[in-house]
Image (cartoon, rainbow, N blue to C red):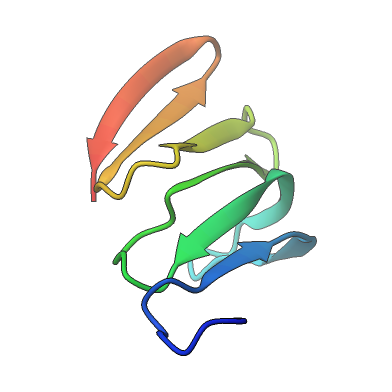
Length: 85
C-alpha cells in the first residue's frame, strides 16, 4: 500500500469461522496459513485452510505457493485432489 500503483497491493487474511450450511450441516473453518490475495490476481495465491463439516473428515484446502493461477488442492483422508477454479 506504500506505492501509488494499486495492482501491486497484497493482503493476508487470517481467522476462523463456524456456521451452518444451506444443507443444514454445521461446520468449522480455520485458516492455518494466512491466505494471500494479490489485487492483480483473481484468486488467492497462497495459504491453507481447514474446513470440518460436522461428522465428516476435515478438508484441507491449499491455494499454492504464490503463483497467480486458478489451481488449488483439496485433501480429504490423505487423498489429494487438484481443482481448477
